[in-house]
Image (cartoon, rainbow, N blue to C red; front, side):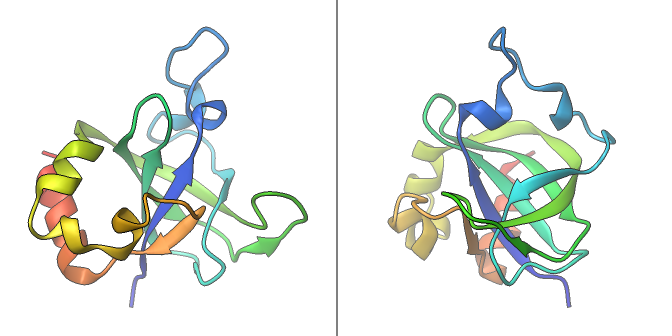
Amino acid sequence: MVGHWVWVVGPDCYLDDDGSEHPKLAPGAPAMRWACHRDTRPGDLAVLYRSQRAKDLAYLLRATSEPAHEPGPRPWNCGAQVVERFERPVPLADLRADPVTATWPALRASFVRTGAPVPDDVWERLMEMRR
């Protein structure tokens, strides 16, 4: 069974030096290391929450490796490839206003961890909201 996650990144991971979207986020770009949840497995899918400036969900990624523990503020990292940039990024305000996503524990905790599971009903709703 494929796991579903939200991974949280700051502007240093999604913006290039000139403030534009980082080229590593182009769908089909080579797999990169991303902060993930320690229970992530290859083939799992994750939505990327862009914290601080953007405050939205904007990408769908597929894990390509097992997580590896690394010292530092983001202790679990795994390889992942961008599958899709959302047609319509999902703003934080929309997530909080939606009756399905509003009860999601990761959202209620303001996405304070680098990775968290996404329940099936929330995942289905996120996939609808991105279009």
